[in-house]
Image (cartoon, rainbow, N blue to C red; front, top):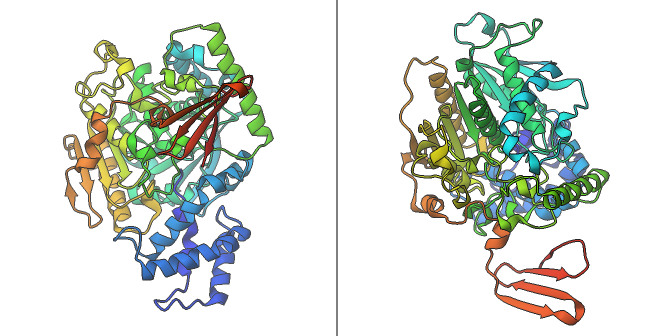
Length: 549
């Protein structure tokens, strides 16, 4: 998910003393002030006040969930654990969730925003390349992404006032792709992040609103991201800047935006386009099959829910239209049998596991970059993940596959494909696992956040040659809450021997008992370990009805 910690700066102002004395008047004024610039409504603040109070009491009596967390970290964690719980999210429609995360966040002082549109001609150029690289997978995708419903891509330059960028020898430029699970958030929502990057890196940031699911299915977002990259390489005459050297461009993002950044780097590589200088990724979502252990780890304290169980929302027009189109596409794929099966049998089910792409397309490398035939020959990578986040294992696995492509060749269904790949040169990869940190932790006021930003600045300066120092060799690092660097720990490495990469985690769960009730045409499968029941009822549209008990 897009980092939302920064948008709750009102917590900084909470007059909480060690004696838990609350100044209600100041508290109310701060809520009013900050609610105007956050994605939460006043009603939400009132609703969550008991949670914030109880969390404060727990913090001083029992201590925080992790030793290095101060009260602010603990409060933000509790709030977002509640906001992103399955119960909370399922009570809202997709449209409501999108509206909440489309609201603009404030920009740092000294930073300006210049909004404009990238002409659709760049989308048309990108379409040529996307169609080429997706040729082997076109039988599992619809073609609606080609039907453009607007006149361009909404983008914005985020820049420090009077930065003199146009006259610099190295015009450092960040193409920023926001997170949000491919269906939430926006460039406006990310302004606290992009303005911070612009100031710290001394670069201009181009942030874009790529098309989101479920209204726009894969590869619409990829097409928009590639169009923005092509725009930087060959801008329009009225753009106000000369074509950029790709070695001055760094692609960056968080969560799904980081996953899209890596998918874009694969697309650039596979299409034979000029490579950018590097990729900076915070908590990248690189496996939409959700097959790695940390995603389903019951002991994981991350505020993200177990993504392998799926995220549902209240019924709405968008959801209804999505389900109808998804069912039609699945029927077309199964009935027409127009191409080879590129998915594992564990994804043969009637309902969609993701709203971004069909089950049959989740293993496409531009959907789940971790599953590409090879992750070699990519630009230098800086991959950052929290030690306590659900996406940790897929980030670790991706890092090893990119840095050591001949050793880690990906899922078994891809056996033999790496040897045929022309991209076998190891990618310079720096992996950083920050202990005690969560998904997209860069908004927390914590020493790890400061350290992460410092490392990002150093990485960008190195890959763009602004630092005039070579990149160090690939490395896998575990960084303590005190900022101490060390090797990965044993539990970080367990994913490297994981044998169920790309299998739906639904099929990985241990079945304890079977019960067949044939007289009612009903089959029940009980999983006592995970407190779940699957019911198959003959004559129904759904293959499985899933209940949690």
